[in-house]
Structures are given as C-alpha cells and as structure tokens.
Length: 213
Image (cartoon, rainbow, N blue to C red):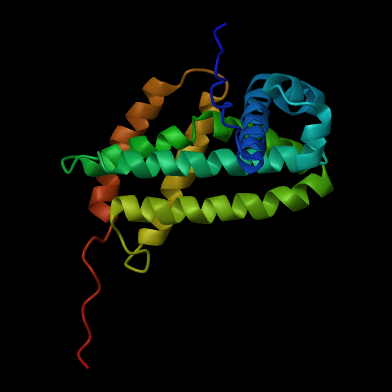
C-alpha cells in the first residue's frame, strides 16, 4: 500500500494584508463608479458589488457613502502623485516647461479628477459633504502647487513665480473641465504650446542672492 505524504498547507494571506487589499478594491471601485455613473449613481451597494466585497465588510471600513467617496478621491490622488513623481524622472531638459505642462495637464484629465469633480458638484449643495470635501480639496491644491513648483524648478518667493504657477494650475483645471464633455486634446495642446514660452519668459529661475554674514 502506498502512502502519500501531505504537502505543506498553502500559506494564508495575513489578515492585515487582506484587509488592505479589500479597502483598496473598494476605493478604486468607488472612483470607477463616480466616473461612469456620477454621484447619484454611486451607491454603496453598487460599489460593494463591483469590488466583490460584502456589504458588511464595506460598512466595517466605510460606515457611509460620504466616508467612502472622500477616502476614494484621496487614495487615488495619492496614487496619481506617485505616478507623476516617477514620470518626472523622464522629463527632458530641452523644452522642459512644455513637458512639465503636459505632465500636469494629465492630472486634470485623469479619472481621479473627474471623480473629484463629481464630489465637488455634490458638495456644493450638501453642507455635511462640503465640510469633508473642502479640507481635502485645499490639501490636494497645496500639494499640487508645491509639486508644480518642484517640476518647474522655481522658488515661489521670487518675482511673480507663485502667481504664475497658480495661474497655470487654474488654466489646466479649466482645460480639464472642458475635457469632461468631449475630447479637447487638440485645443489643449495648442493652449499649452502658447503658455510654455510665456512661462519661460516670466518665471524667475535664478536662486535668491546669498547674503553676507
């Protein structure tokens, strides 16, 4: 009689790792729903079904739709910044300003921007949601501004650098809004082509003079 030795039991995924993976699926499914279905169509039931997560597990992580949606936009914003940081290493030295504008513009035509747009519109008439969205929007705005300064290699205290970078982000946000209804890539490219030399001419790139002690 041949005896069979049982092999080692398959390794179990640690509970903490499973929980993080479940949370990530919920957040990414939420953004997908916001982009495809809008705020009204993004229900906790639809999100849990798309993520393959039970309603009980979803409610454990996110007790309300507001908690879920705000966390989802925050999560994807962080991931988008990580992607942009990685892309920054490949920016060319020649025509760098135009390349920076292109990299920043992608942030305003990405799924996370359109998901955030749905959130902002809903928050306009929902005081409770607005109280959660405004601090998030301000933080993301500050981080994006700092990131743009870093990509452009400028000190915001020099000349009109701060205002020029903020005007650039406002311009890109407006172009992103236009792209929410139709493919506006050709016009966006033309606007960025015109804006890049203006920035090259107006931004103060030299460092502040050293003061003698």
